[in-house]
Length: 116
Image 1: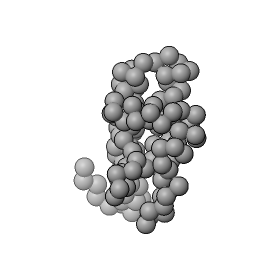
Image 2 (image 1 turned 30 degrees about the vertical axis):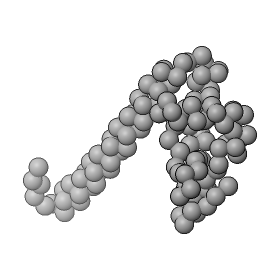
Image 3 (image 1 turned 180 degrees about the vertical axis):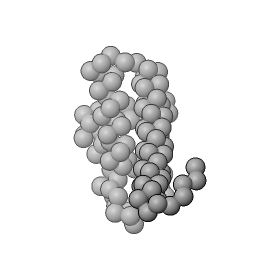
């Protein structure tokens, strides 16, 4: 396990392979396919974050438990990322609207003018 300046933990391939019960070559194959993108050390050693390990577990579940091929996994992961990004944008917009409503309610309670 390696730690960087931000106190994030990273794992080398052999540790991730043991954590996920996969062969290290499988991890390299996932990287080659573009569905896994580990960080690299200055010595070009693959370093996997907790998020990477969770992604490997998700890939494993999709392929081994659900029978999805790697092309399908790639699509599922990409769509999941897009959905999460949209949800994040949606939440930001909801927060803006909540703040705008509070502002308008404050103006109304004070008898102020409301400009939309």
